[in-house]
Amino acid sequence: MKLASWRLIHELLDMCDVALEIVDIRDPLATRSRKLEAIAKRKGVPVIIVLNKADLVPLRVSEAWKKYFETRERIKAVYISARERLGTRVLRRTIKEVVEGKSPITVGVFGIPKVGKSTLINTLKGRHSASTSPYPGTPGYTRKSQLFKIGGNMYLIDTPGLVPPDRGDIESVIRSRPIDKLENPAATALELIKKVLKYNPYAFLQAYGIESKDPNEIIAELAKKRGWVYKKDGEPILHEAAKAIIRDYLDGKIVFYITPQRLEESRSDSA
Ligand SMILES: Nc1nc2c(ncn2[C@@H]2O[C@H](COP(=O)(O)OP(=O)(O)OP(=O)(O)O)[C@@H](O)[C@H]2O)c(=O)[nH]1
Ligand SMILES: [Mg+2]
Image (cartoon, rainbow, N blue to C red; front, side, top):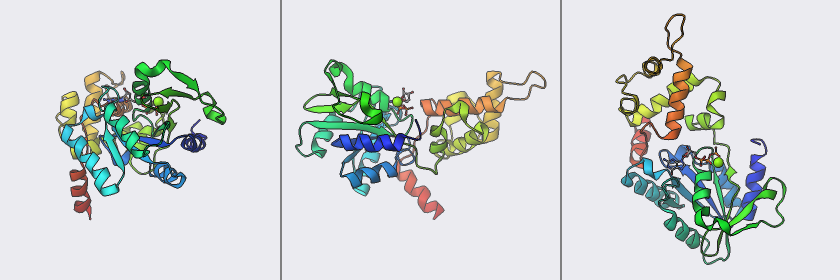
C-alpha cells in the first residue's frame, strides 16, 4: 500500500479542483509534504494548508502560522480542529475562494500519516453523509471512492491521500511506520525528547511528573514509574517507555508546539 501511494496521490489530484494539505499545527513545516505541493502545482491544482489540531495550541500560535503561510509563502492557510469540529466553516469558505467561482467543486484531502485526514473527512461528511454518490469512472485504487456532498456545491472525495513524509525530520521517522515496528525506539525517542525539550522544557514534568531534563533519564524514569522493569535485575525496559513517549507525543498528551517566531530565532542561532 505504501509503495503505490504516490500513484494514488496522482490519481486523486487529477480528480480534484482543490487539494487540502492537512498538517499538524504543532509543527507544520515538519509535517508538510513539499513533494505533494510541487506535484499539485505542476497539475495546476490549488493547495490549501489545513493546520489541524488547533485545539492543542494557543490561539495566537494558530494565527501566527496562518499568517506565516499566507504572507511568507503565499499559500492559503486555515486552522481547524477536526476533532472538536472548529474552523470548518472558514475552511468551506476558503475552498470557495480558492477555486474562484468554479462549481461544482471536488475536494481532495491529503497529508502525511497521523495528521488527522480521516478525522477531517468524517467531520466534513458529518450530517451530510446521507447524500453520497459513487465517483464515476475512477481508476485503480480509488475505484471505491465516494463523493460526499459537504454543503454548497462542494463534494469531498472520501479516500485520503496518504503522502509519504519528506525525509529529514524526526516527524518522518515516527510517522513512517507503526510504533511497534520502529527499528530503534529508544534512539528515536531520545531525538524526539530533545526536540520537545527545546520548545517546552516542562513537557515531561507536565506529562509524567518527571523533573529531569536529561533525555536518557526521562526514558528510564518513565519505565520505572510504570513498572516496566526486568524481573531479573530491576533494570528499566527502555524500549517500552520509549514507545509510550512516542505514542503520547503523537496523541498530543505531551505539550509541545513550535511557533514561527521561535523557528526564526533558532534558525538565526544556528546560522
Ligand atoms: N487533538 C486533536 N487530535 C486530533 C485532531 N484530529 C485528529 N486527531 C487525532 O490524531 C490522530 C490521527 O488522526 P487520523 O484522523 O486517524 O489521522 P490520519 O491522517 O487519517 O492518519 P493515517 O490514516 O494513519 O494517515 C488520532 O488520534 C486523532 O484522534 C484534532 O483536531 N485535534
Ligand atoms: Mg486515516
